[in-house]
Length: 102
Image 1 (cartoon, rainbow, N blue to C red):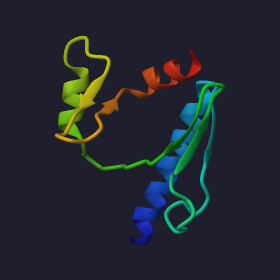
Image 2: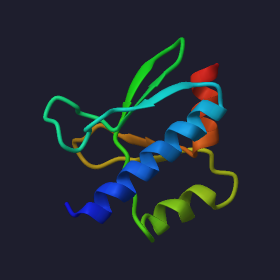
Image 3: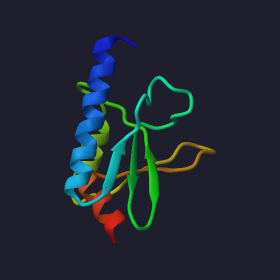
Image 4: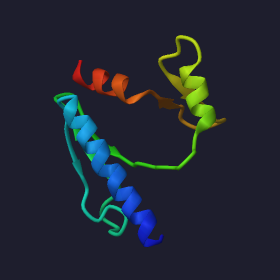
C-alpha cells in the first residue's frame, strides 16, 4: 500500500473516531493497525454494552449499490446474506450509535 493510501486510511479512521465521540461513544484509533500483525482492527468502539473492533474500508466512489438499497424507501437496515455464510448487517452511522447507546 502506498503512502497516499495509508494517509487516506488514517484520515478516515480519525474522522470516524471524531464522529463516534460526538455520539458520546468511547472510540480510539488503533496505532499501526495496518502495519502490525497484532492489531486486527482499525478503530475500537466501546459502550456499556459492547467493545467492538472496527475494520474501516474507504473508497472514493464505492458501494453505490449498498447506499441505494439502504436509502430507498423506509429501509433502516440492509442484510447481506451469502449462501452458507453468516449474514452481514449494514446500518448507517446514526443508527449504529443509537443501538450502542440503548
